[in-house]
Image (cartoon, rainbow over all chains, first blue to last red; front, top):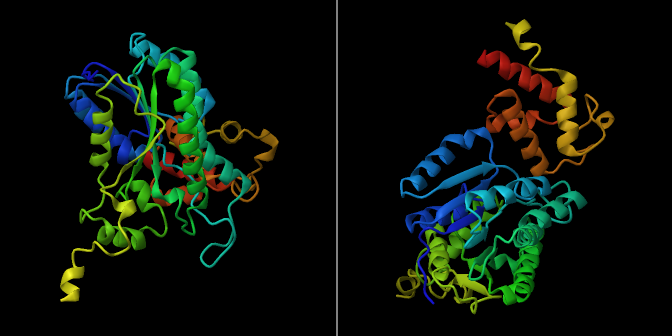
Length: 278
Length: 87
């Protein structure tokens, strides 16, 4: 059954920038209350305060916490807070949008003196993939993912594409998609839907941290058959849309939100191509 | 002015804070132990240290200052300088 999301609560992990931020804005615009977890230095303080003000401007509650979402201590502290804030009703939406990992190759190569360390690889997998499982475990234990609620995790085309610096993140995205399928099955009796969203190449602060981003942003811009890159707002809109139901039948998927970028054959859809061919 | 600030920044308190964030024995955080090379600090732990220091000492780190957070000694010097600047 289609339902309004007004008055529901959503928890966004990675809420201060990029996709998480866009989802926070879109959900608040629809009347949903937002609990945001982000981890930033003080230089970002004003921007986050502005975002919170903007969300509250929609007449919803917005509570942001500047803490490490991948830390067990932080989870232990926040889960009771979420119960308290939502008045025990729990969450309708959980968004995992944690883009924090180590962007170095596995082996030393030109431009990189050292390959990835054990600790860096563990950290990347833990933050970008395993933390989804731990959050779901704790939220379920606290009865904060009721029937009809939705869990979304952000994956990327990088699961099947290799870039020199992206090995650990690619591995994390593969693990994340596997976690999504497993959680979808385990949460089916509770009628909670779990899906991964595979955005196209999207200009965000996290994308800008990938050393090779200039090259593939240029290529993706030419390659996307829509003639533009994915925007964080495209992803936010997909989440709003998929959350307007209490059905859990769309679950366990990796859903492309990329304007068909993944399937467009290299260069064939470049709008300038016809001109070039005369 | 420096006298007023002295109680706010204590080297052993700072050492304890760093050891706690890194989850290592305080004895490992010597003045010159390199966070990355000796204590295997990854970027998430570096961010943890930075955010904790900002909250604890009421300072705001600039992007270019983050590379000074590499040993106990260089971190202490950085915070001391920032506290002096803001006083």
